[in-house]
Image 1 (tube, rainbow, N blue to C red):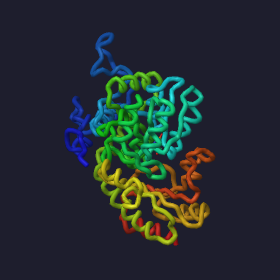
Image 2 (cartoon, rainbow, N blue to C red):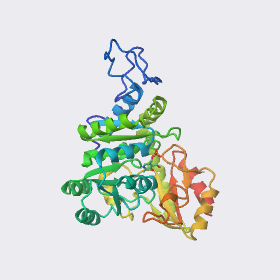
Image 3 (tube, helix red, strand yellow):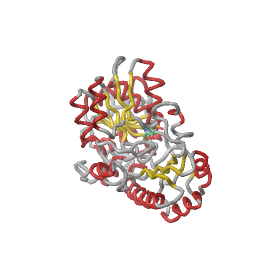
Image 4 (cartoon, rainbow, N blue to C red):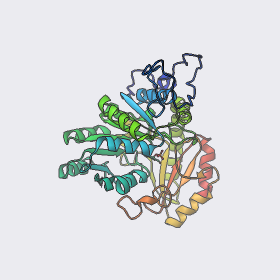
Length: 384
Ligand SMILES: Cc1ncc(COP(=O)(O)O)c(C=O)c1O
């Protein structure tokens, strides 16, 4: 597919929002570790900065870069991905509104809807968003304010057709929000496919080095962006200057890292698919994956996440997670180092007993950018 940013993606990742610092010529945006700004007379702001909850130059550099990379009009950087999700949902929904979420959404998204926003009068329903007919039926049954999509999903790596969902949402008067954390804007740009807003956990591929927790939202419509900015400034879950700086440092190498993540994950998926201890591999790059064709249409590559089910049930899955040496047992994903986890007991434990509960024999890998052969060898010995 063609990535439509009006410029080369790699160039924008390195330069958008990142002009050399005007006073010093510093070639990367400095960490403006500052809360307030001298005014030249009352109301005489320099560059629009008055207080760092409202705006900060380091955070703004990250926001401008993300706006360019996602092809949006406005980006806002948050203290975490969940803070970005919360802001977007509360900027778009009022008590009494209804939201459709994927039936295999990230566990934290489910918890936000089920344990927090439901208590404030925003109802939700989980639907299989890779099935457009099911989404259409759910929208017809009860009007929704927001159709929330994740693609690929966490942890099952299901694929939703963003263009089709945008059409269904808009026909029903809903907004389409896409959590683009797993793909990153290098692999997929939902706004150019018709989505209204994108959210990210910048903790993952955008940051890329497992050294910062952060989030972002990007909107297509400047008015929606402004509503989110007002809410962000009012509630205050902003990215701090150092966190914004770390995320932006990661973004500069996103393209190079993602190419390697994709290449390594494809090799891991192929190896697992042929392994006798593995019952099923979930990777959208495999031709047998139900979303393979849609992924090939809307993504530049298939990403670095691979999930698989083992033969032998939960105990075997847990044991495999404990036996790897190079794949580190841990939550999160998207860093240069490979991680392994058991979603049922770890990242998705909050979904146990809900329609989003994941199979107990499922293992999730975040395939890093180490030497591919070393990764394969590590998994082989863990599965042996
Ligand atoms: C797909 C997805 N969305 C959102 C989040 C939440 O992001 P954060 O942990 O930065 O709050 C995560 C975290 O794992 C995630 O995987």
